Length: 118
Image (cartoon, rainbow, N blue to C red; front, side, top):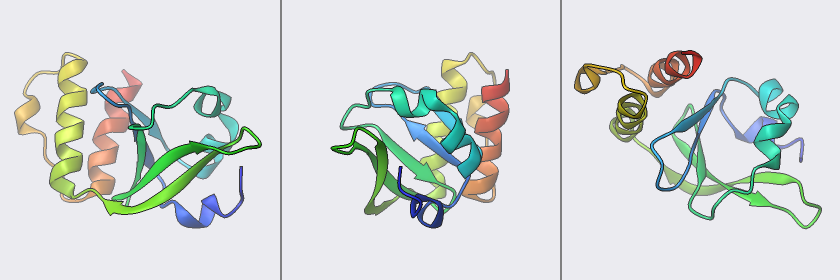
């Protein structure tokens, strides 16, 4: 892993797996660095990471077999993040999913984090 990731990603972040409403919440650079499960997963080309500012990163395995998020230049809006959070909550069986709202992406991530703790 390259140390410049720390400067690129605005933590917390989520990983969106292709064709799956399940989200993986990552609270900080420290969690990213220490959780080897995050690095040992074979990510699909359509999987991506979204940071707290909405920036999208692909999850690319380098030639040295380390996982390196690469900024795509794209981003997700708060509305899109809330859509991901609602699908994640529904998949976990939460009720009143349609009522989920947040004033910012970071606040939407707090909802995702709380769903991940249950």
